[in-house]
Image (cartoon, rainbow, N blue to C red; front, side, top):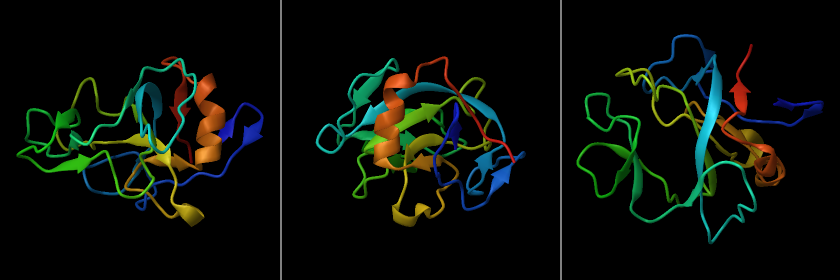
Length: 155
């Protein structure tokens, strides 16, 4: 990941970079995506100041990943009837999690959901399609990020 003149390691999707993103393919969209807002685990990550709207992650926060559901690619309150991702994870991946504008407006069924900018696993193992960095890099970048920030995935 290049930010200005600085370069940071990051993890991308297990399906590589894709120009034809589909739900469940593990690909990271080949796209320019704006940062919309973020979530953080108050007990795990000190969000500090940010120009992005940031909300603490509660135990009942989920993200719907079912293309035919009316709340596809939106936050939901769990328990929720359709398949969803739990945002308060047992690992640290979403201790700081920023929502990218991929497939938000317009929302197209099956074009991919929950494409986030979040924390990486040790060793930068692949994500499910998101972009991930270390907690240290996230903490360093967060004060500089805003809704005007564009995360551009290129080959």
